[in-house]
Image (cartoon, rainbow, N blue to C red):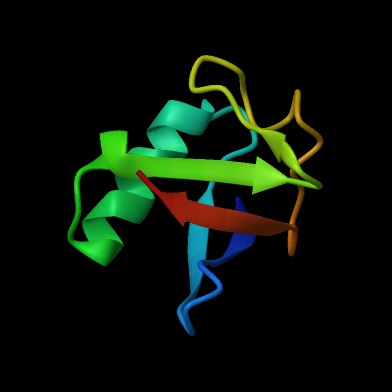
Length: 73
């Protein structure tokens, strides 16, 4: 179990617990439940690179206490 911090640059910082084997799409769905919006309206970035939904968090080297940027469509 890892804990990832997501910041939307509008004042919201959210911590989400997940597994490294989860896909980015699965992570977005958990995050969307906490935010109360549709997961399809979420864009996540790590170091300026947009994360694609079908790739796992491990493949993007997202580990415990990793920081991701959150943008809304």
